[in-house]
Image 1 (cartoon, helix red, strand yellow):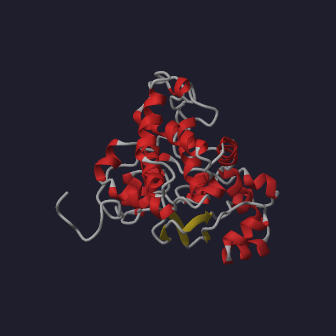
Image 2 (cartoon, chains in turn blue, brown):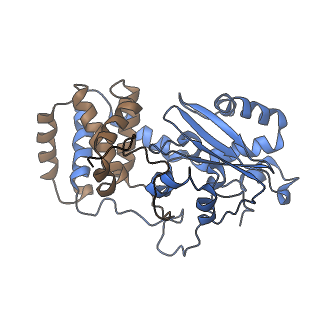
Image 3 (cartoon, one colour):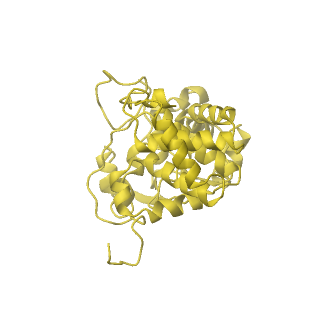
Length: 216
Length: 110
């Protein structure tokens, strides 16, 4: 899944192109001590099991923007599915086999007249079941504060210039209501199969800060 | 912060802010475990998304600037577990001392 807004060397980075965060070999922090202690206590007292924690981490690791990309690609090739997705994104995604959880999911269609972008001004709400965990910048003060007042300027910092004649709609997520953008299908991709199209759908295009990209 | 502008600090939509830093990182094991604790304790009925956020928001703006995302989360989850009666502060304090005595790295202590 390419990221489309930064163009850095991948030397010394993880397979997904990010710096490794120091993990098991750094000095133990106060908050890491709290995590270990709380986890062990919750297990010892019978509230959770180690197997549940392991399974939950595996489940979260398996959720990536590739899930959302499959939903968008299906919408591009199947008008009936697209209508169902725009009507009730949670139900349509569940029908594809994705566990969406209890929150409401709303799909926002980009057209030649409207560009949608998603933010959570209050915290970090994000369609994590379809896209995985949110990127750091999505949780940052700068993105949360500015997207609702100067979206075009924010988008330009991601390299996305929205023509003046197009409307920009900003959607502010809540704990109970999450949004996913259905980007407009690039003309260059017309005629490709659903499986091929999914490779064009980047994470950032489903947040609304970039457009789909031809796979490299 | 003694002034009140009609909204709380976490309601930051529209506030002036700097440029967006596009850097990202892969989540460390301990961060994934914090995330898993939130999901599983919620599923067990011990807390909710709203109770997570209530504690996060009560931490105030300083915590937002000085603690990382999952540091704030584990602090909130611990507070919620005490409030729910799942653990006591005494138990947590004793267990933290025990964990700290195991070693100086996360790998050694966990």
